[in-house]
Image 1 (cartoon, rainbow over the protein chains, first blue to last red):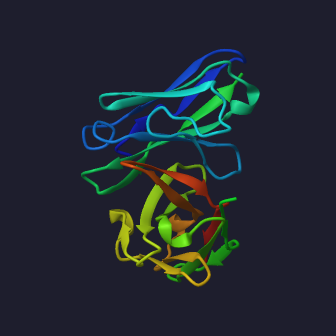
Image 2: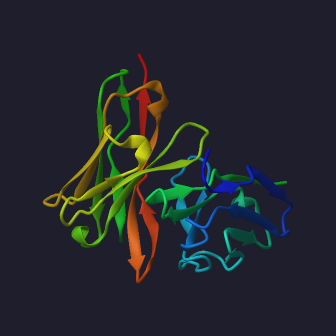
Length: 110
Length: 121
């Protein structure tokens, strides 16, 4: 059981906006920046959002991140079929003195 | 471009050890910490530990203390992850990932392609 929790699944139809949440505590999300990774089926994770809300070059602006207190969110607007993947949040935990990942959210595009 | 290339799949018996390599290219090897993360079949990502390629210092997740050893070879820009006393629950894909740092902030990018380790009698 991860110290950072995500809802296990999310879904939406093409064109919709979906939000994936990540909930933690003062020792992780509450005191450190959060990163998001996208894992397409059968591939390695890929950086999607870093430092709460920054997009690496090449990531469409349909993807956005935010953080408030001990929670963070990843929003995907204009949902596309190729967005179907697993999404993970990751953050440093000061108590564990290590990185922790959320359990992952499987996004299904209906 | 920055690239991490890992060694191939392994099959090991319970109780054995496995050593996975991760060869870095496209950047100065000693300037970036390297992490290891694993993913059991159908499961999420689990952080294992970190190595500083410059001086070889390491830090391990509590779950792996005493069983995992990270090393590096600066002459070949390669880091290694060795996991001992393997059990069936260690069956997973193992990833290396470079830690990119900007000021106070950091993130994993890029990742290696992953190495499947299967533990089976």
